[in-house]
Length: 101
Image (cartoon, rainbow, N blue to C red; front, side):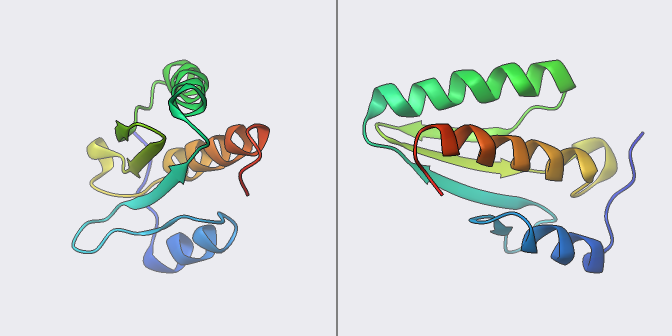
């Protein structure tokens, strides 16, 4: 089992993850991605799903038209772990392929 990050480690990790922030009332991180259209949003989700499946770490997410809302937490650890940080970084890299910062 992976270990939950300390508050200090979580804050430090977030500095390296543009667009991500802590979720109020939860030990989780979140980001909203807004694409040009539904096709881009779905393409992003498809690519992110492949990464998530390969790492056996799955996001909480919601898609409405061109917007994808993502929340990451490791339920087994009771909060944010390195797995969440790694998946967030991978999602940011995928989003850059679509021209998002």
